[in-house]
Image (tube, rainbow, N blue to C red; front, side):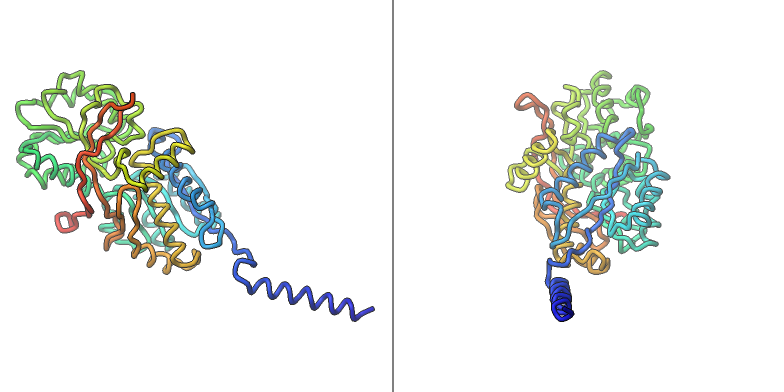
Length: 390
């Protein structure tokens, strides 16, 4: 009676040992990725779409990379530094995420930076704050968004090329727009920026600022504020009689596609320059737009593009290291090397782990019954100007 039991026991042991030695038969635990954006509060119109685009990228992989399941731990920073840091700690220390794919708000990113570096957690973000990859130089922080110097310089250079000699600058009283203003001054010369105006984030009435702008003293206005503030100043710029008298150029995501659905009619004709043009006719962009439309019944814009591409970089790096997310140094090394073709062309990280990619000059037009961006000009492979702003 004993022999059959021993044979059965030995057989089961062999099968278990054999199964554990075979690739794919022993199920590896999921790769946990901490995803955090402002999902409530004043920056919801940017945070929610970016989160959705991150989810789209992983959905296209069926939430599986290199044979391992992907688990997204999603949190809401509310755009507040104390809450964002608390949520980041929770994801790292309680949820035990392998990496962070999180955040777009500069004050939240600033609050997280030292903690992420101390914990040695790989972090891919879309925070435009230049210091994250400049002065900090953390090996764990990657920024798939142009720095504020990067997008400020690009806007200044393009408008100067069009013949602008003197300009007004108006932008949030916040680090990204103040850095963009420094880039504009670098292009035109401080003496040719007639005035730099810095209203607070969330300004309801731009009248006191617009009243200071004299069309006779400048060739145009460069504006660096985003979300609901871009909508308000566009309308009020027209109401104050400046439209048609002084050209207006939006810096970065001023006319991003996710905003155009709620932009006032006065937005038609506005120019801006940034990383995404929704009407660009490439196979990669068509796939991105169609996929986002099918999932969310909305048009993707620059925030969705950056969230989607951030996730694509993470996916490619995980593939390159055969899913070994626990090996942080290997993951970071893989990220540094990737040259990835996306909806807007080739993209990569530079020597300080900031984004390198194509910019597009955009013009808001009304077509097919809606406002959309027309791709006016491609500016290839824009890199952070470290030599101009050490």
